[in-house]
Every structure is written in structure tokens, then in C-alpha cells.
Length: 148
Image (cartoon, rainbow, N blue to C red; front, side):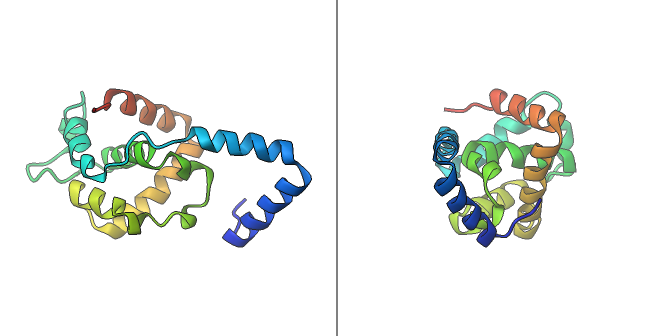
């Protein structure tokens, strides 16, 4: 089911009014999804580490531009998990990632257009909900990618 932002707001108000215990539980769950990283400049460091993970280096050409779409999706999904884990619990339209510089930094880092990265963000968020194997691969990549 796809709801508009207005419908989400109405639904939220109804849940708070009619089911305050459920609303409290949901708010606590959302509070647990705190970003692991805030510094957008570290995306390039994460990219370097990502390129050195086993099996990943073969996905890049001589220009260091991502040539494998699956590797691109995996990197973007991992960055979303690091910087915007709450994205999985709310409509993408409510988070304007372009204003934060996240999309342009990722695009510049992996050599794609901003519009392509925006499209892939929407795609990987859906994939994480729909495909268990993709979600597990992102979790595994995130564990292997921890940078101080």
C-alpha cells in the first residue's frame, strides 16, 4: 500500500489518538534507529574501504567508476544504513536527501549522476523491504565496513 504524505499524517494522528500504547512503542522503535555516522565527508573513506572488500574490487573499471549495478546498489544501501536508517520507516519524499548533500556526495564518489543516485536510493529502500537476501548482504557489508 502506498500512501501520500497527507495520508501518513492523518494515519499518525489516528494511531496516537486511538492507540496511544502502539504509538509509544512505534516512537521507541524509531528512536533506536539512530544514524551510525553524521559526517558526509567520510563517504569517500567508506567507498575506499568498500572497494577493498573481498569480491568488490572486480566490479570497478580503471576510472574507478562503478561499472557493476549490483555493487552500486549495495554501496548506496550500506550508506543509507549508516547515515539514514530511519529512511526505512517513513516515506522517502519526507526526507529531502538532496538538501543534506548526501545524494551529491554519493554521486560524486561513485561517478554517477545525482538523478541516478536518487533513483537508486528509492530502489534499494524498496529492495531492503522486499528481498531478505539483499537486506542480509547490506547488513554483512555494514559490519565489514566499520570505519572509525
